[in-house]
Image (cartoon, rainbow over all chains, first blue to last red; front, side, top):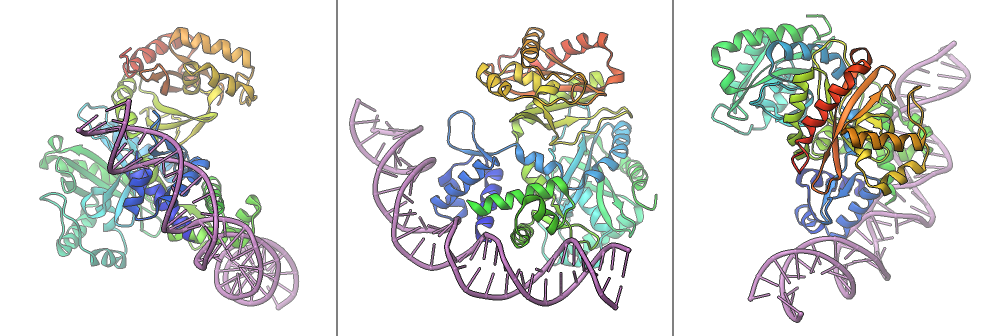
Length: 244
Length: 244
DNA sequence: CAGTTTGTGCCGTGACATGGCACATTGGTT
DNA sequence: AACCAATGTGCCATGTCACGGCACAAACTG
């Protein structure tokens, strides 16, 4: 349906670039102003977007979206994972993320934050590249070969000097991950952020999600990685259906 | 626009009752099956809903929604509030919520969880009634009189024996809250959950949001409330534009 | 295997989204 | 203050595309 596509396009664009005005949207979506206008009015009537407070006429997405999204991504998964996440949070006092795959990315659907002051602030809904994040690689490592092949068919973006962009290197790494039981991100997406993750598997051994401990690079030297990795792998494995 | 309304209706209904099938939706929304079907197909093509894994034909909302919503409700507010929330979290080791108003409710847009095992699991996006939650009452207490009058025009639902449903009693309570600088919820929504909250005010003294500490009733006896209240009020006041 | 409910696909009709255009409003500049 | 560019808003004739009734297929029930 035509309208639906444009309306959601508008909604996404507003979310991505808020606060944003009609003409601006018209330009970036390459649609007539009147179309954008109608879409915005409709979205507004239904309560999905709002005018920015302060009398400007620019649009922002409404909180109502958050209510909708609260139900997304498996409430039960989040609730199940919580005890394990809390345990990791207590043991490490670092940020703990629960992420699921979404296409060529992974999305944080639940988190516990470190109490330390040097902080990474990753709000819920952040999308990390699947090939350059610990959770992404953990999920990938236990995915079907078909899945992996399909993903590797397209090329990967480079974010830092350490990003793995070569298909063969990535395949090799996935094998190591399966052997170790955990994945490591050594600043492959953002230079100063490291992380260690392990997957949550369902009864068929397929990855449902992954839990990671994300740490500023300065606090996770190479020699500490194995111990943290084993901790994460062991703790998270309790969530997999077979019990480990 | 007609289509847009129905499509979002479908999306909301899927979110609320997922996993749910076509006929079921047709019945509860009182729309022809074909209409629902078309809406679902469109939503699916755009990636907002998915078939439940496992071969059933029931629908659930996709994680993509969470990505959209991640931008909602003021990223900057969440980031600004984080240090203060973290401070409260460390001092109390109880759940700390950041909520904004949404009509007759308040929505949790950010949170930090207690590490204690007796836990309240309130996922992001949970909507609490404005008259029966600490954050709701904190926001209300600093709202315009017009706003309050308008809200009080309709009657309030009773949730527990302690819920304030009488307009006059509520007005009186709001006055007390303004004097004390913090609001208290003594199991007025859920019997076993208490909370203490204070508002974040903008330059004009209007409430942007509120931060609460939410505690199982058993851990917050009456005599402890004032001290916790003062702590919350004082800590949160640093976020208000005038600096407290 | 019959009976019932649920999901899927088709099609003629006409409601309604489209997008070009003109007007109103805003805000920045001289 | 006055001008100008850019933005937001509203209208309308056109024809596209969503509507919903219906019929078939598929899945579940007992």
